Length: 295
Ligand SMILES: C[S@@+](CC[C@H](N)C(=O)[O-])C[C@H]1O[C@@H](n2cnc3c(N)ncnc32)[C@H](O)[C@@H]1O
Image (cartoon, rainbow, N blue to C red; front, side, top):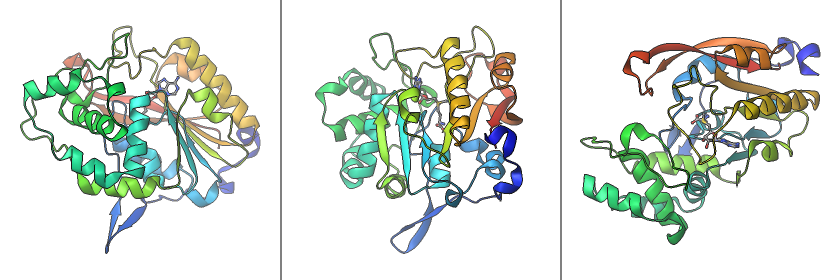
């Protein structure tokens, strides 16, 4: 078990820098092509010293993919990426397989409130995979704060964001993300199912919907099903099983009593995070979050 037997000397924790990908004659850093609530882009600098490099593990697993900031930072060659949000995973598949067609469709969108609501009204199931991905990215870039929230019927219900000039189609970001995703496995799946395939020396990064800091603090629903305290406990139990299997495991979550209790015995670090998405403006500011590891 890594928790008791591994020491930091078994892994070289260098300040690994983001992986650069060749795009024609230039080298570009891959990064998320969508905004995502709870996205880890701004925490990468704090995470970097604690991430193993891709040569130190076999497969990379990210079962709560969202915007995929850690995946793009690491740029592993063998990876399993998953999320319960089917629209999101469709978008990743289209970025991976049809970047040029997506860029073409995405460039045709307009920015007006009326147009936004017309696109929001469309039923994803009636669209082609490329149209569906284009709708997803368009809504993400133009809705309020880039939030993703659906009602009980699974219909996207975030209002218009009133940005003056939103960048809807960033062709370079899509092209470089597409390169990073080549040969990467993507699935619509719950976290329990995703990690069933993980083996010793695989690295699993888990970034679940956070335990709320208060009863009213939950600002997003990601999918039509909420992530409950029971799910948090099940996740912690699975993390212990992965540890026993010999996997390297890292988890992000909020700095709460419950999280500290669920992960007792692991290496727990606090990281500082500027919180911008909070419906209560008085609750904006810096909060601490936890980074939990078995290595
Ligand atoms: C905190 S976000 C991940 C953010 C991501 N690390 C990033 O950098 O953008 C949590 C993600 O978990 C997904 N999710 C929620 N419940 C899930 C479940 N039971 N199984 C798998 N994914 C789930 C949500 O759709 C959401 O994308």
